[in-house]
Length: 341
Image 1: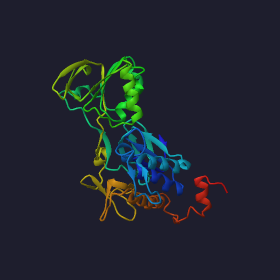
Image 2: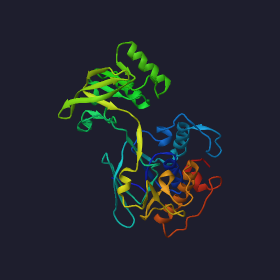
Image 3: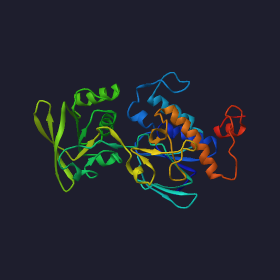
Image 4: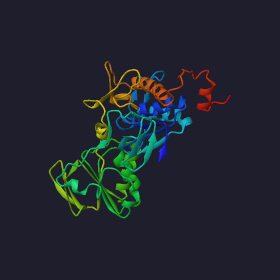
């Protein structure tokens, strides 16, 4: 079990900045996110799109903002548990929470901060009859162990970065890969598209464009084939052993809705002093929270993270007054940031 001061649910900009604000106050954090890389919506939805309203940064992309935040929090050595979803949050006593993820990682923390944006991102499912019976067996929405696909015939569905990334990574070990995409234009970086085209030209994989999977066949959870239908109405059956689906991610409140918090539609009500939820010791910052006058802006989430950090510090050390110190002059802050004398 990992013992920490704070568990942060969500590795988007607000979750990452929460690490920084807690670190300045001498508090250790562990970060959990259901997606495979930090950045939240910035990485998943608009990694290359410009952002213009971050103070003192005239323009940056979602990925650039994420990388700057990761650099900023390096001195605090926060644990990153990516590709894991929080499954259990239980109060142990007045001062501690037990948290467990879908991967079985367990934490004992003194506070929990929900920085989950608009909720955890869930894969968009393959909507063909009977697909559910293959999920987790030979139909996959995430790749947890790439080695299991060695020597297998794969159908990879999708046209974004995730689909192309796994095409390229698995092409050397899979027996055969067939990429199926509903368009002939891709939502992936140019370099990945070029490499995929090179594999096709070399006869090392197949690609079917302007088409979608309409049926899946198999037995006892094992896929044996998929049927693909083109926009022109032509159908073809492809023999496969595994199907990997990358249709993007949809935000859902997910397990958070079952934690007994005061939910306001798909957001969580908080106060504006501590950004604490209806459950003492559990806080919410960023797009997932709600209060009168709430604005869903990254910079507002940064402000919320700062106030939440002070509130958490006061909760953990109630006998001490939490003083505001400035990073420009405070020797304590410089020490925590690793700035030499």
